[in-house]
Length: 261
Ligand SMILES: [Zn+2]
Image 1 (tube, helix red, strand yellow):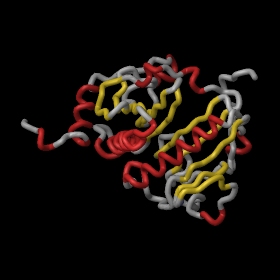
Image 2 (tube, protein in one colour; image 1 turned 135 degrees about the vertical axis):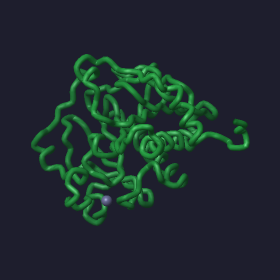
Image 3 (cartoon, rainbow, N blue to C red; image 1 turned 120 degrees about the horizontal axis):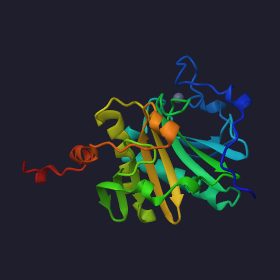
Image 4 (cartoon, helix red, strand yellow; image 1 turned 90 degrees about the vertical axis):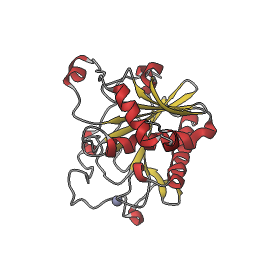
């Protein structure tokens, strides 16, 4: 099978997609649970189903509804719900990878108006690509950075070589039994972006990657993309990464008993 570099988008399907982010009058399709069809699996309020608007050719598109609460957001989930969600998402992601039907399998999430998403209700997507391998343009350097925290083999860093530019948060999963730490680091990055970030930000993307034997997450606050990246593919590195690393530690990882200054 020929590996392809581009995905083909079906515009006739795209125009039918509802947009509850742009248009607040659109009824939330993920709240009308009794109307949902093609359900693949559920775990309590978490549900995986076939995407009703499969805009990508030669792919299997699914939607993972994270919660039955339309206003809930990953950055605020209880630990119990967060772990349950990550376990469910990873199980299905790996199951699709191991089916052998796809060149690669995407797992990602969009949040907010600048994220590229169309439905506000918290959800992820798992997409099997029949002839595109997403790992071709991904390098281990994309996940190195200043360490914010680590536990066992699981590491939370702020990119020093961001893929697109400015601020990118990385989480590397150590052992499989460190999933709870991994999930907590991802949630911390999302929470920092939405509530304690030095610039107003209401949007982020969360991407998951399998590179060799390692699994990673990248959390990216979204703003209008820099023209230097769009036109010339030059990522930019801000000069306050050291400050931001300390700021996140101060907000989320400081044991107050150890503060002496
Ligand atoms: Zn909803």
